[in-house]
Structure formats: C-alpha cells, structure tokens
Image 1 (tube, helix red, strand yellow):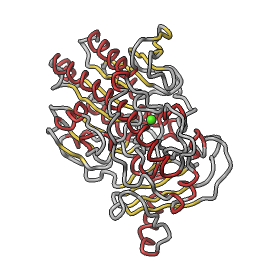
Image 2 (image 1 turned 180 degrees about the vertical axis):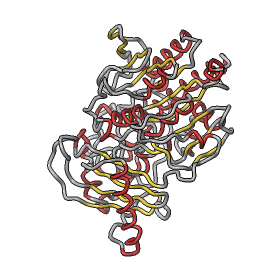
Image 3 (image 1 turned 90 degrees about the vertical axis):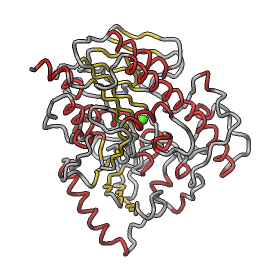
Image 4 (image 1 turned 30 degrees about the vertical axis):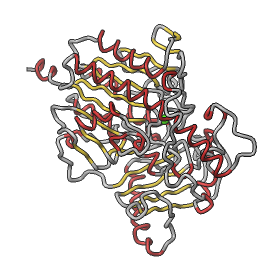
Length: 464
Ligand code: CA
C-alpha cells in the first residue's frame, strides 16, 4: 500500500533562471520576444499571474524558496549573507520523504548545498563561457556555454538517477543575469532589428520619490563597459544615450533568454521521450523579476511590479487542467510547502509560506491571502544605491515605506536617508507612474494599508 502511494508521488523538476522577468516570456504577453519552449508549460499547465518575491534580489530569494521563510527568519537578508549549513530546508524534507534530490547550476548561497544527494554548482555568480563548477569532488572547468552545460548536467543526472525513487531536481540557470553574455551562436541574432521600447523608458524621475532618484539603475548612465561590450560614444548623453544603450542591453538579455528557452525545451523533450511527463511536476520560474527599461531602469530590488513579479508556470497533467490561469497571490515562500504537499508531506511549522497545491485543481482556499508583505534590506548597498524599504501590496493598491537606514547589522551600513512613503493605485495606474501618497482621495485606503502592513509585520514576526 505504502509502496504504491509512494510510486504515485510525482517527480519534481524545478527550473529557475536568474532575473528573467515575466514580461520577457510570450506566455505572459511579452511584446519583445517569443519563448516557445517555456510557453509549453503554460499551454499544458497553469500560469500564475500574481506570483511575488518577498525580497527582490538573487541570494535572499533563493534562501526564501528553500526555507519557506522571509529573510529575517532564514538569515539571508542580502547578497553577502550565506545559508547556514545547519539549516534544515526543502531539500532535506524532500530527501526524508524518499526523494532523490539534486541541485544543479547557480546556487549563490555561499556555503555548500546541504540536503541534496547530488549537487554541481557554479561558484558565486559563475561564468557564462567555459564555466567552473563545484561538486563534492572539487572544482572543474567545463568547455562551452553555461546555460547549455547546466541542462547537460541536469540530463546526465536524470539519466543516471536512482529509478526506485521519485526525483526532486533544482535546475538553476545563471542566465539572463548581468552582464548578459549570449551564446556564441546567438551573438548576431537581432542584430538588424529594433526591439520595442517600454512606454516609460524615458520617464522623468524628478517626479518620483527621492529613493527612485537616488537609485543607480538607469539604462545608459549606469551601464558599464561589461554590460554594453563597447564604450559609450563620446558626447552621447541623456535620451540619446538611453535609446542606444537600451538596444544593446535588451538584445543581449533576450539572447541569453533564448538559450534558457532552448534548454527548457531539451528537458521537456527528455521527459516526453522517457514517458515521465504525466507524473512529473515541472516548474519554470525566476528568482525575481527585472526592469526591462521600465522607468528607464535595468536591475531589480524595488518593490515595483516589474521586479517583485516572478514568472511561475507549472505543469502537472494529473492535477492541472491545460492552459489554466491562476490569479491568486502566491509568494516564493509558498514554493517549499507546495512541493512538500505534492510529495505527501506537511510543511514544518517554521515555514511561513502556505501550500498552493489546492489551486492546481482550481480550488482556492477561502482564507487565502489578499495582501502580501515585502522587504528589501540592502540599504544603499550592492552598487545600485537602492534604499531599504518594506511595504504591502493588496490586489488594488501598494504602499511602500522607505525607512531610511540599515537596521541592526543587516544590510550595507551606509548613511541614513530621510524616510518617505509611496503609494500606487494599481487599478488606475498599473505602471506605477503616480505616487498618490498624501492625496486626500486616498486617505482611507492609505490608513487601511498601514494597518495591514503592521498586521503582516507582526504576523511574520518582522519586528526589527
Ligand atoms: Ca536574480
């Protein structure tokens, strides 16, 4: 009986890229590219339209995904924090549940991965070309392009796996992270095309918060030689520079995405060939979103829509109706509880996220969250001078509080900045162009959101 129940548990293939915004995926309506392989998961599975990251930056998002906890609980607040090797997380629980566990690609949590039967990871950010990988055997350089190699290693693992157990595989691409270095075969792709610009590429930031004006995320001005692969033309500035730099940056970004898409296709083809598709949960996501020239920016960190929104596509033919869409608010801390439920396990009480497995069959629990809490800790740190902040997003509004300093010993210790608030009406202003904080017409909803933010801070025990 037990053996049968166990054999019916799905395999889980979790594919995550780095900095791949949903508005660069055609299943999410991208106006700038096509992702036919990733789209297979949307066509054959479920697209989640409101999946959010709780701290929009690489290392903390990975920490939250593994632990099911916010940064202040798992200790991974910033890019310089590491995963405590004693921390018991998703991989340990999946292994205890009888799964063979593997972690392949970008790990970015400093310490060696724990809880995985097999791991083969990039050191830190890793390299795009001829990258070094680390296993329990040590470091080894491999010829080729990083995105292809990570898929190769994933396929190797799947071929050699222990077939008496279900598998839980995390395949983490480095791409399309900065500095957006494409595969040699795609270097010329898009060369003679003009990629459409976002409607707010030339936004006048002087009308925004001090926090927005302080941030050094500006396409053109804040891009360096590694980003652009050529020097900025002498005398070029302002709008002209942005226009020029946007094309260079976005084309390389999309070239990197194209390799990710190809390699998602290779993994899906393998599952088809091996007859594994029916009983395998496949996820495609990214550690956070990204500004694709939106507000004139690249990078992430801010609690704005483009960067907190994670693409999240899930295929599981046994449970999910083809081509379905879910609009409930799900968070990266929910992934671990969801996978554990699919594996027949209850999430441990220390996990703060909640399983959204019921939504796979279209059943949203009545008491599902209607607001989410966000916090970015790296006050002015990490090279982009983004101000530390926290906030709350409801289905219709967003309130952000820039509290103005690094609290405790967390975050880069830098000079305090004056506290300020932002508030956006997501229904009337989905692009978040107009701060309505202080507008009397929004006094009531502002007060409600402040109360809700404090409730969430207490609920998640973020009291610092
Ligand atoms: Ca990232």
